[in-house]
Image (tube, rainbow, N blue to C red; front, top):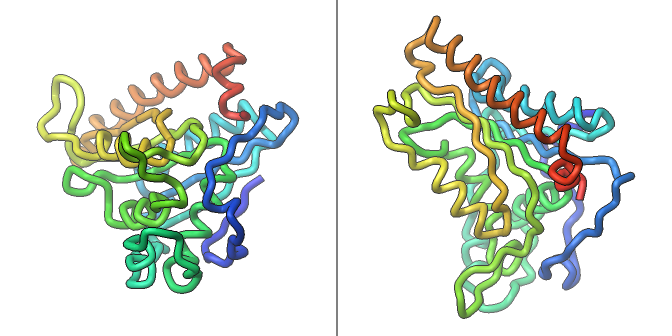
Length: 245
């Protein structure tokens, strides 16, 4: 089952429960929810979308009844944070601001909180995440809502869950043929870890600028890794239970 939410019109959160971390108990009968965030402006034609869709399909093989929530931000980007949001973040306590980009932030965080697993499909732009993904991150990494400050530093409020990241890159940034640095994967590990998401799994199709046989070979190599990953999930109940916890 696929749900698409191109517009941000979710109910406005209220009350202190929206500002405290919470934990869910294991319910093996609960239907799994998959949040699919696709970031390429080329939409379904892009290599990152093709790869992230493949990951979603593999998850659906393990959980055929799962609900997929589509969040396309490449060709329908979320707005950047505005002045009200910025001022609320500078405050020492939660401000009662629910207009402008704060409402957008509330909706995107609710979507993320409801997901049992997350799939992000993104191109690498100038060694880094594209601006559309950065805008989404700015909304979901939010002080006093998804993380808090402690004496030891920032502490995430969200429960951990698997996050699969599908990357497409014109150049090569891993392995013996790497010719460019990778700022994307360490950034995502750090920034998503800030809110409690530490179980990140990266898959990439690199060297798309070379076209032809190179891309076909890169796809095949990545598919081997994907199949191995999901065969392991299917064989080990303990590993897959994390997707439904």
